[in-house]
Image (cartoon, rainbow, N blue to C red; front, side, top):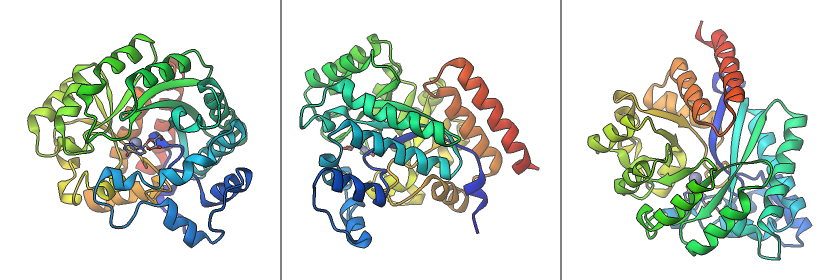
Length: 337
Ligand SMILES: O=c1[nH]cnc2c1ncn2[C@@H]1O[C@H](CO)[C@@H](O)[C@H]1O
Ligand SMILES: [Zn+2]
């Protein structure tokens, strides 16, 4: 039986391409790249899912090393992007932003523009085949040379189909403060920006992102127990891209009790629900909704509000936002009665 949460229309703003590939897509990509990976799904899953004993974000990020060599051609990126958008469409995600790091797909000579074109081609094909709108975000990596990130952003900005920028990666050792110049550079390029922050118990990283004028914060988990920072977050009308399962795995939150949901709700903070990484976190958006309902008593009207806020902060045109917002309201009417 498919659950209510499967049927609810959804908007997802925070989903990594390389962390969300289906096992069958990984098998196909490995064959294309002539790379030996286990043919058995259980064995493959062990390699590409977050280790059960992960203690930190860096432990969680290890499986991405297995995926990196598979995503080195435009055809592979196209197949990957199609696969993730297809999975999302199958669980009634109406709009998704899928992010990836061009840096990790340039090992054998692709240009930044070629990597983005590959991803965008896959998203366009998925949009033609399924009832979903899918957009592409480019990640700079926190731990990388700022000059490389600047170069990647500069080369990305004019590429057709690029919707926004992000910074991902090692937040513990590369806090927001060290990114400031590159963030400002990205902002000057005129491309909308979201930022991973608050995944490593450092609320300062969220504060600084907000001070830089960033309105979308990936995770924002470190707001827990920081009412002043939550107040600043609310004043800035920022949106938290929540990634619950991922946060429990990286120990950004030790337990459900350490998760800032109730505090954010009480403060009327804006937020939305995301998978972060379907495969690495062994989840999907339906399961994330179920977890919020079970552990935090999130109601249908709340899910609608989260999706409307996600829509309002999505990196689409105002006309497209309006159309999606109207669709969400119309479609939720049957679930709210
Ligand atoms: O939760 C996360 N926090 C920080 N970085 C992440 C997270 N999930 C994935 N990536 C990083 O983003 C890259 C581009 O998709 C991935 O390769 C991974 O290194
Ligand atoms: Zn993320």
